[in-house]
Length: 428
Image 1 (cartoon, helix red, strand yellow):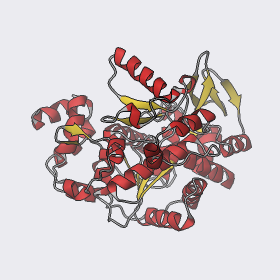
Image 2 (tube, helix red, strand yellow):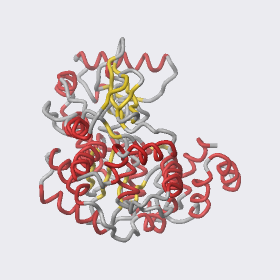
Image 3 (cartoon, one colour):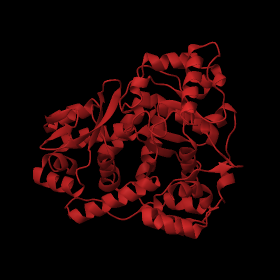
Image 4 (cartoon, one colour):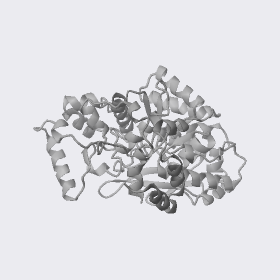
């Protein structure tokens, strides 16, 4: 075990905010630490944002009687988990994040996960795959199936390159680096699904070609983890939510900060200069062999990408494009809406608390006449970890396929360094 003083000293050079949180709560029991996560007084959340969340949940097929408690809870306890990428199966890190977060909620409260689709399928959480550790490929497909043969071949190829992660790919190679946001399910996924064993089909969500891949993935993830953890988990695509929100507030009028950010040249230029011109949106383009993710920047009253060039765009053009989910809002816009315009606490990883604090300092320096929430909050926002039990990391799909569940109370008195040490060792 690395001595805690050595960890704190080394992290102070690379992740000073993380070091501060670690040092304060290193020996604090989970139950006490997690209670701080949801100690957040109600704030005035824009109707446009609440409506956008409700609409997105409804588009996933969530019933009204389940949506209303979500909106009510957010108005009373304005906290969202924003660390997650959209995945059909989580790995040990996201599962650990969920265990930490759920420890701060009452048993009857829904756990709200605003998951990110603004990543490629090949992101580190492997959105385009079912991830596992202790299972065998024949548990996923009959040994006589084409899908089984393909999975065996892919596994052998990864092993030859020294890669040890285990996964069942659900996308063709040409989509590997494509943006998850607004990507439709295809016959490729349907074919994979149809070849699954009955045991796998009962664990994941039914597949409907009329829904985006992100909806199927979130519903599958939710089904698996609700079974394991015994709690109500509500996962939604935050990038689609922000798209809906941008449409509403851009239509509202020129005085709204979002409208000014785009279409008030003097103010827009000053803000984007301060933030060193972040990408505001993402999209996909078709390369020679496969699709790629392209960052899009706001320049000269238009959207500009390295591959797609510059396109002038007026407010109505932008509204129409966002209505069709043609542009995926990036991190800057997403957290501008959630954290700074609406004052929602965004729980997240060590990287997130660092860049949100950087964003906060830059917004503060601008001295705008906007009603922004500029209070520092990293001490109450960190949810990260990689929990081991009996020397092994936990994989949700492994647990689900074995019919195992987790009693959250068994973690309540564990000191936070039990969750954090694996992360700290990697960082130093």
